[in-house]
Amino acid sequence: MNTKTKYLGLELTSPIIVGSCGLTADVDKMEQMEKAGAGAVILKSVFEEQIIHDIKRNTHVVAPTDNYGDSYEYIAQHVADDSLEKHFSMIREAKRRLTIPVIGSINCFSYENWLTYAMKFQEAGCDALELNMAILPYETSLSADDVERTFTQIINTLRKSIDIPISIKVGTYFTDMAKQMQQLSWMGIQGMTLFNKTVQVDIDIEHETMLNAGYLSNPEDIYNTLRWVAILSRKLRCDLSASTGVYSSDDVVKMLLAGATTVQVVSCLYRDGIDKLRELNQGLNEWMSRKGYDNLKDFRGKLSVMPAEKASIAMRTQFMKYFAEIQ
Ligand SMILES: Cc1cc2nc3c(=O)[nH]c(=O)nc-3n(C[C@H](O)[C@H](O)[C@H](O)COP(=O)(O)O)c2cc1C
Image 1: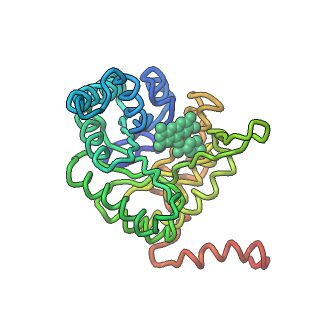
Image 2 (image 1 turned 90 degrees about the vertical axis):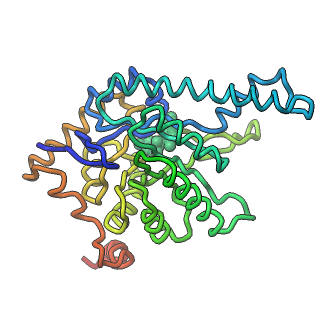
Image 3 (image 1 turned 90 degrees about the horizontal axis):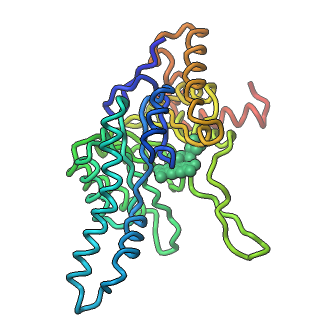
């Protein structure tokens, strides 16, 4: 069975790839992932806040006052470079030890750092870069246009300045999801990951504080991604990587039938261990063999919404099957 695929212009032996998470900050674990059949790994994101935190922790001796402004800037830059350097030496080691593609990931909040970090990731030898664009419309002062402008400005700047393939990882909070995703896909990016998982919040009623409601997805979280992969896969001008709620080889097959180029897994590796990748690849191969498919292209996108088809009608049909019992 041939499960080779091309993602972001890179040759992958399997469409099952490991999404950005704590496990992909460790080269030993990434080596295990490669041995277990991962097609590629997406590194743990470098968050701009982490770098700022390191600067604050290490520059307390020189306050950013008028008198010391220049030396503060100098030391802050040095600490930022040092902090990033640790990450880049990990990338260089990963590139030395792995044969599968190593995809970097960044998440920034200041416009200029998206570019600075992206260029450094390219220099460090990443095969591609996933922009973890967790830009959420939380502020009442922000309009949909403001949020969308942020996306286009970042993509435009990076696209002009770096040569490695770029993919963007987006969340679900868009007013006009299909149109926005299509327009973003026209901007010269090579891929899009649907979806970033917004960290859920909970409230501890005893201590009256806000809490993180847990990091891992549940298997039923797959359905929202599945729907949007099916709607968008033939309408975008870039590859589509499906993320969230993939726990079994059946889930991988579903995402491919919906039109995903690659399928990312994270929570299931935390729950079941890195060797889960073997089971997922084996299950995909067995299904293909049972169905008589030799290649992924024989069935990829078979159940996606066709280019000339209206997604609203395709989705309404499912709704009618259930509520109006029309088959
Ligand atoms: C412990 C943990 C750490 C994560 N760290 C990152 C990260 O650094 N960058 C990122 O883009 N996504 C991160 N994610 C999100 C995953 O890449 C993925 O999009 C999400 O967990 C949904 O996929 P899943 O259902 O397979 O877990 C993290 C997820 C987990 C569980």
